[in-house]
Length: 467
Image (cartoon, rainbow, N blue to C red):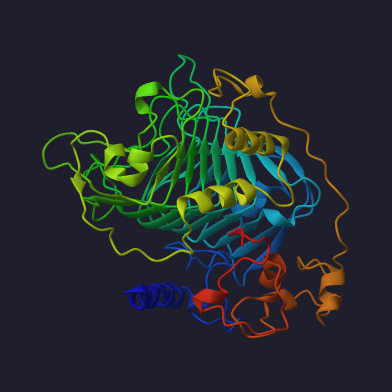
């Protein structure tokens, strides 16, 4: 079965990549490589901006030349790098397909968006940024699109949902932090997010300090695989939802079912968790007969509740769901035990490159210690409850004489030409990743690696699996 599942994974990658092969003709890429080493699951085939223009963000303006919004407004395939660190005060919307946002390139303390980040495009790769909003609307969100990877992103402080990505297709959300939802003016909400995308994977994410929706599973969300995530200090609800039907579904054809695996996740109640929901894994929802979602739970760890850890179905509340005797056969990830995933998530999740900011560092320690230092036992009302946005320092930008996104020192080290601005889209070692991608991925552009082999699909930027 494992060999069959991996074969299906490669076929899905091949099919998706074949459809996108015209984007970068000068990069003779194998069709089975992931968006970057370490991308797993159903969004992994996303090409993003591979082979396209490299656009540098040179200022922190909300819009205009050199801004992140200007890079998102470009219509051609593009890879976005950063020549500055700090906080962008304004909303950002991705309007056109085929984009890679490489937040790991920011010098100094990295990038924070003080606003909303909206995904309104297909084939999107977002890595290593923070979205800490200051107004209504999801901090990060998007619907009705396909081929999306969100990796190592920290999202917080929305008074709607912090991170809502649903009713899309072929999505991976991995190694993200979804934390500290704020309240609406009437004191309601404080919700983590709405998830549920047809054929999608969610792994090694952290939900912390949200009253509810950790996550809420969308109605009619199709096939979803959720494993190796950590949920801490929910208030009155961990996860719920997953009805079969979505009223007014705009997808054509609509998705008329919800099937969810929840496997090897770690649940740790906290100071704000209501006593009657401390053992909850999920509370499936229904709006009536014929509206039941299908669920499988297994190998989840519920801290302080050994009976539920032994029999996960004791942590599934209510009767409005269809239990599955086995999980649906999702694409594999490098799955860990729930307890090992807990350690890995605390070590690596969120915008950990160039470095974690003080907000993420504090939250990670609160999860580790089982404590909360702000708001009502960790459930906050406004951003001011936690001191607002920390100052982020920039640093000197490495010399890049030809403005191709690859520093001169790096190009010289690997025998590339620091004065040839066209060599970033070439693939020197013919392994499928262009030279600029090798730089972004922390890999060697002179050594062929068979990245189509699952054992080589491992991030070189940081040891993502704690091994």
